Image 1: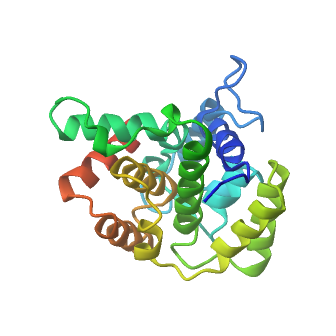
Image 2: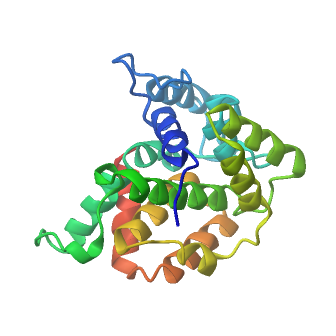
Length: 240
């Protein structure tokens, strides 16, 4: 099967939004700036106790595709530890690092598959679709994306350069049942499974029981050992 939907181009832009590193200015093409985000977070949290100190993700991230994916949930407020966007920006490298740590630094295993950043052509497109699918499913994990928000998210992804085929694919992802087993079947390699889990960790608020349950279901479906899942979550936090 060939993949020609510019999934890698869309994912690249989302990764730039997450990493805020383009042109040496500390911003992605959308103007998203991680440092500015963290300053805004500190400002929102300053002078507050731990109770009721949630951060409105929509107001911090703005209306771009990544901001909508992460902040579209009604009333979504998360604490600073959930700001794991560096993990989105470097998903392949970080997932590979987690694997190496899990293996105690032992050599590369060709059966594991290659990180996203090393792939080319159709392999790169396929992996990008897998990661995009995992991101959308994670955004849906608390069940609070309504029709209007779904339409807005699709419009924002279209604005990043989605063609008609990718547009239709995105709509299918929002309409499909939230099924961890079905998502896990899309993984083309163990490395892909780790990347799909890590990007899901970066997307969700693990203090939300429904979203935490989704992560647990996904780890099981992807056949990740508990220690491997823990290492991936550690990498996501350290990248923030």
